Amino acid sequence: MSLIDIQKDVDAWVTQFKVEYFKPLEMIAAMAEELGELSREVNNRYGPRTKKSHQDTADISQEISDMIFALVCLANLHNINLDESWKKKMDKQYGRDSNRFERKDEQNGQ
Ligand SMILES: [Mg+2]
Image (cartoon, rainbow, N blue to C red; front, top):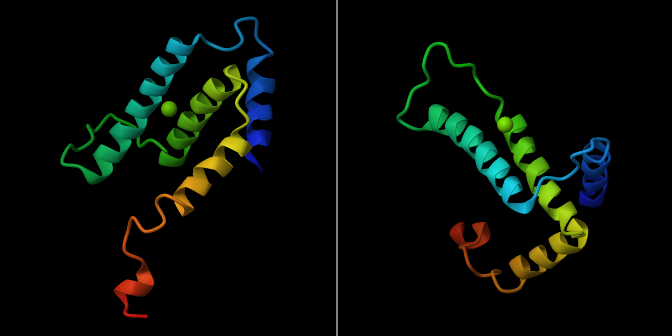
């Protein structure tokens, strides 16, 4: 599934309702809320803060998908083609940031 397919899925879901897309700042708030949910789960699993006995175990994959959904809403509101945007991002990774980290081959002397 390409990013544009995901954008179409989100748009089909969102536009069935009268409210449609939230305003940009409302979307940022929704993203912050989802990031908080993801952060809580990661912190409970890997950080010093243990979960209270009554708290459910959140599914990290679903929390990540919640974040993606919120980000895609923001992209759709701005008519951004995420396939094109992603290509630019990866071009930057392989261009500007190609030597940013030590490569596995260098580490192993290969
Ligand atoms: Mg969530």
